[in-house]
Image (cartoon, rainbow, N blue to C red; front, side):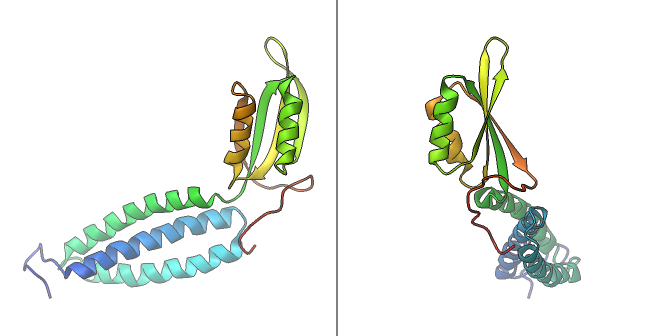
Length: 186
């Protein structure tokens, strides 16, 4: 039952809260689903897609069915979508799926020290001799789980605050030494 009548009719406040929260959940699930599928977690992504589409069908049909009577539901739906994009991006950052390649350019003296420390953390480290603008350098390459990669960069910064650290996402890895993957069902 609307509180007001006319173009600005307002549905019950609990319905607006439900629409807002359901839309946040739907968009957050959709964001995580796309990331999972892109990272190769097809089973988990497929399950999430079912939940996402069920939420979308029921909430969108409710909102669209009464949009001319309750335009505030449409506004609430849009605000929930916007909040869901933000929540989904924060959640993805916390979950940190996938692998990264961490390349460190350091001095010839600190290269072996860093390699030993990183191997002590369980990382496979490849060390390459390099030439810098002025002097010789060492490049250390580590492929690691994105989740927990900050421990590696913190260790590098503690040992060599002047080191250049480059981090890139890795699409796939075959062979070599990798630490055990703690993953979702793949």
